[in-house]
Image (cartoon, rainbow, N blue to C red):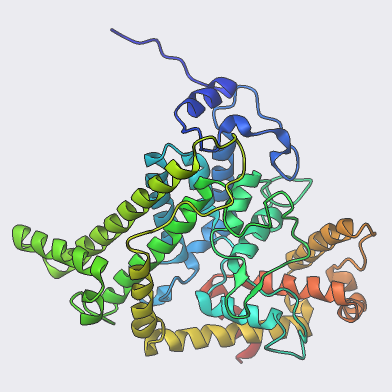
Length: 449
């Protein structure tokens, strides 16, 4: 018998989607116009949920497209098959949706957070992130930044990308994402600076609606992405290390780790059974490792939800980390240690990290000493940040910048502490937006004959 076909739109669509969700999931009906920085009413007869709008705005952003040119561990010019920041992002999204579906969480919200979580990551992997952090902590290039102005972490910068740097609306900056997506992006990794044991901060960011007192996402969808980011990073960095021949699949250091040995033994059994080659052995090994880790995460999370959920008021923020590894948590730390010793500190990776470090340092110094070397849109970013800060302190914006007044105004900016802080952050954010190749080209144009 043929069923009548009826397309769901607007409130009917939201209700149908919410009906499938667990009571502890973020509901589409929880959305109100004030769920975004600038109020947005739901569109009548809309064919997308509010979180699908978030996802789509992220996918169509320029920052998302640039992820394909940013290093994960190995720079892209070393081979076509090493992970980039974009492929890592897609892998995190895939894992996150898989776990979200198991617990009947909001998959659209989970996917939006996963796709946006690394939009603010600098080029050259974590080397550039560390360099920018040292500069903005007043530890490197003290003649430029002699004091601590909050440091730099990619999760904070990712929030700035979606709040300020992208342009979706004509009359205000940013993508105007929902607060759930914004909080998930901000807290997918710690807000505590590991190098200096202090919280990263930025005076131009308004995080008052994102539960700033809690360092973990206050809803399960955000916590799922945070854990999947860690799982994807460890397992896929390991696969890239095999590809680069920095370690072998039967390394004694790895086989001493229970979870890895289990995955290896399953892969070896499959190899004998199906007569597969070494490449497919690696693929199956990593696939098994991911499956074992995700199964542990699902089991541990299920236990935590059972304890936490009964009697919990609807929409109350979750202030504890429920999405975790349990049996394998210590083993993942051992895997990270092996990667540190064998891959991250290796000659091949270290020399590229140092090259990226030098490139970032020199670009920062050049832009600060001669701001005219930066394009006009950087001055617009500075003015947007200044306007937000001025509203916060209830003053009129001071010393807005454009190319025409640059030589007259820049010294005034550098003399006033708050203005200089905003300017320094703007330079860091400009560099963080670059792809590896763009940064190298900038360096060549500025410093090579």
